[in-house]
Length: 248
Image (cartoon, rainbow, N blue to C red):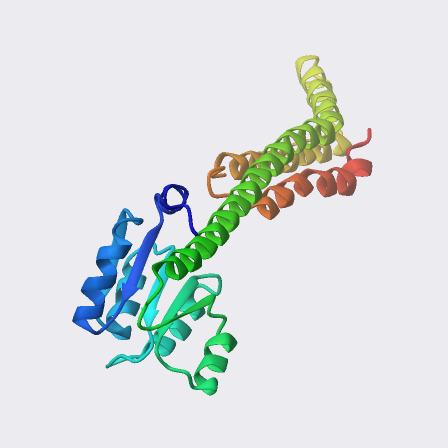
């Protein structure tokens, strides 16, 4: 027998979509469901259920099969296209093997025979699905935390790379600039090599400015790991490509 106290804890914050066209069955089952779910969205057929699914963040679906406009299997197939991991429990009085096979093919999570004669079976099926939902949510949260951790590590790496790869070019830029300034202050004529050095300074300053602009435009709330990796790679190729040209 299912522990109702534990089930109620499990279903807290779980949003249920209940789809049933028969008013008597819908009202009777709703009275049972409202004892364990805080939030239940009711639909009267598959089309209504699909529309309400699209407008709400649904965790679990409990649906009949034989309904007008759109049956439960058609609705479930459409929903599975939106979210292949959506948990769905089918309520059915049908015993057609082809129907059951079709439901399995579209990855229906569980089946309950109608009419519901043993409430504990309903609760048990719900408990199984809700446990699966919690497991998947916990897994997504762990993945999200790991991705955020990876982002932080990549940001540190990005800062280190920029600092490391631009240290020597900036030193050379400073040397070129100082040399030119010294010649100007002492009325020494600048050579062709000096002017080439000034061009290099301008080019390197523009490239460094572009990198800083990219960093400034980063939205660390939505940025993807691969975007950070691209920025990490920016400075190193520039450094390697121009290293010899910067030498004096």
